[in-house]
Image (tube, rainbow, N blue to C red; front, side, top):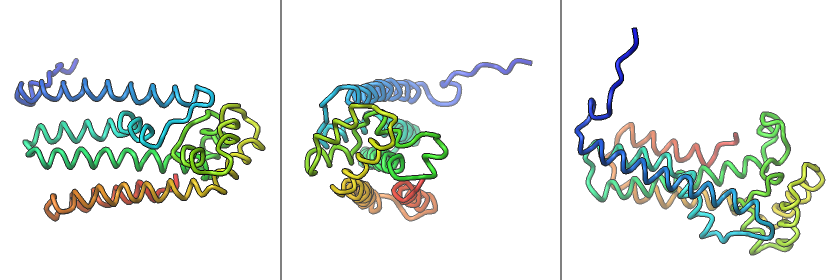
Amino acid sequence: MIAPIHKLTDFIPEKHAIRCFNIYGQEMQNLHTGQCWDIQWHNMKDRVPTETQYFHMVENKTSVLPRMCVRMICELTGQDEETTKQLTLFSNALGAAFQIQDDIIALTSEEYRKERGVYCEDIQEGKRSLAVIYSYFYGWKGDRLVELLDLKSADENIHKEAIRILQADEAIDYSKEKAKLIMKRAWKELDSLLPDSEAKEDISDLAQFLINRSL
């Protein structure tokens, strides 16, 4: 027997369904825009975005899915404007911290390399991660680093040279601290807004997991 096909309005009032569809449309547009920027940057030689541009990209790429879920939940549960705003900002921070840590893992984790079967995947792709941006603008061999990334080479010697530059500039450490700072500031705003509960503890645990995970 074929299961019946249900519409969203079978489960929630039409006015909420329409708003959820609008949220979905907005965020899918954001997702494609952010992904386009990311791909464009690491396929354009000598092009390095600023840190501000990087975070704008991340909010329109990695933060989209958690933010979309949060916005829909707030709509369906009738949250007030301030709660919706702070939860949305927190989801932006969550996505940014996740992306930064994900890029760090791709650069430093041997376990990640073994699972993916590729060494320094992001360097091979020429990806402009936060560590790369910091090293380019504030490091000692930024031009050389970008030159290595633009080669898009599978040569491990090139990858190791790029890693040495990032390490010498303390760019990876900078990225780690930036992710922690982002989550600390976002949680500070949310902590005073949400009542104490098991769910609140779960959100806090999730935030800490994202910035401390190794894979």
